Image 1 (cartoon, rainbow, N blue to C red):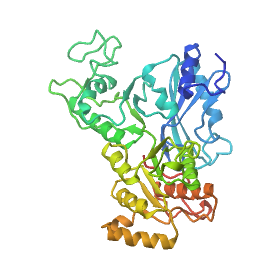
Image 2 (image 1 turned 30 degrees about the vertical axis):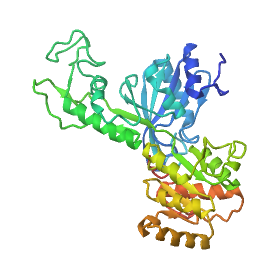
Image 3 (image 1 turned 45 degrees about the vertical axis):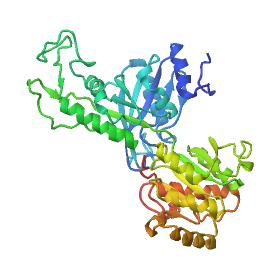
Image 4 (image 1 turned 135 degrees about the vertical axis):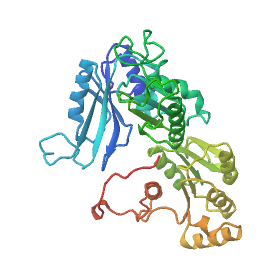
Length: 422
């Protein structure tokens, strides 16, 4: 195996790190676990640090990476995880800090051997999955399904173990039934079942919503009936939930170069891309290389089938570029009835007004029509297919982040990096 991870290896960064660990070379993982203000990267962003100057990824665009490398190498030497805070200070010119004005909390943890429970695919490659771990003892991790099953009761046992109950990682053979001192000299806490049930319910809601962040344990569960001290206690672990949901979907109707360009732009932004149209002649892999799937079908029927199968959600983007009312109108009508993020339709202002008239005649309500982005895209002044695609996806991003009235940053105030919904 190569001594560096500079060249991409099959299977992504997680697979490359596994090979590195199998060769007996430890790594340090640095993860953003909390942020405030204009932080440059989202929660859960992770970089990899290894001996000999190995660094993969970025947490701040260069502001604190040099210090993080030193911290990573120190953690590799000691084997003890550390948590650090970086933020802007008046002496920022002389100290390590975020010049953007925000702050981040990072967890630096050692990884010395391949660990199936480490969840590296989710942590490093963005693969669908979720990890819950103790920030005090990062080696204690629990992999969760995404989203967590509605029957969250099946996770109560593993959650109790993660919290350090009598049957969990913190237990010892010497501990007696009353929770007395064990071999470590400290008490073994019982985990209140009410706490575990509420934590399971909270995890179910947060994994379903794709919410990464620190879990605030409930503190009002009281004592169990037998009087054994119950968590949370002063030594209760602080938990961090990392959620990587499947990529959001971009569904495009149309067979033109504009559709191909929009799919390419969507793929660049991390969308799972689909082109769907009943006109099969032009739906070829050569014309649509950026499409994850090519579907020959009426798009309105396809949307209904995907919705019934549970494959659409509040992040889904639907773009109607067909330029044929027989296809466009049923598609837009169906799309506006679904709880998706964005519905856009291409056409001139005259085409838009005629489409609105026809949709009203079809029974689409004025409230539903307010969610239609037509003419599609932001007014960037471009004309090429690539510029068209940029204007559409720029509007999608602005809509997602609550900045529909997008303006140049030099004319605005407040944080540069908005809070992006999951």
